[in-house]
Length: 182
Image (cartoon, rainbow, N blue to C red; front, side, top):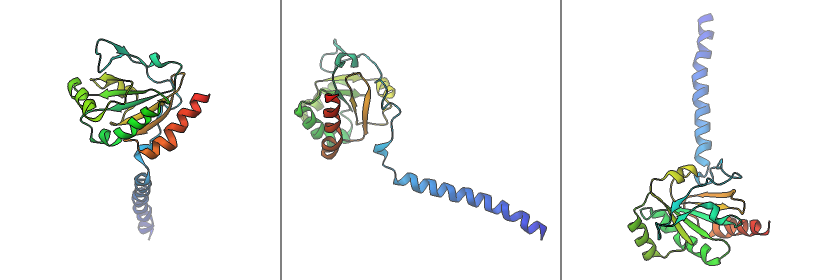
């Protein structure tokens, strides 16, 4: 009998660990990957200086927009979800409530420019991140991603994946307006 009771806890420990893992996996599957909290929210946006897509002899740096609320949209011509969100980024830019800057990610310049010619260019400018290093600094999981950056250069919002009309209307526009009043 002593052997029988000693083997019972051995059996229950792996079963308990397995059960806990199943519960954690189940909870994880219910989370929205577009709402992964960014450790950069509330922190200064990483600084960089990159050539502009349309004028590679001219550079862009976030400091160029100091004192203004602005939107950074990470995109690429090879990215199907970027095309899905493109009308919503275009509408946001047309509102004129904040400059929308593109960060063209790991793209060939000619292909990116042709893509913008075909689909429209909503950006005040696009910076060319050919190596993808700046996107890494911003914690980009994949394109597209969109950030709202305040007047002091602090990241206030990050959206992973394509923005929708609903996201623009309910999250991005109200945030930009609130920041503009502050």
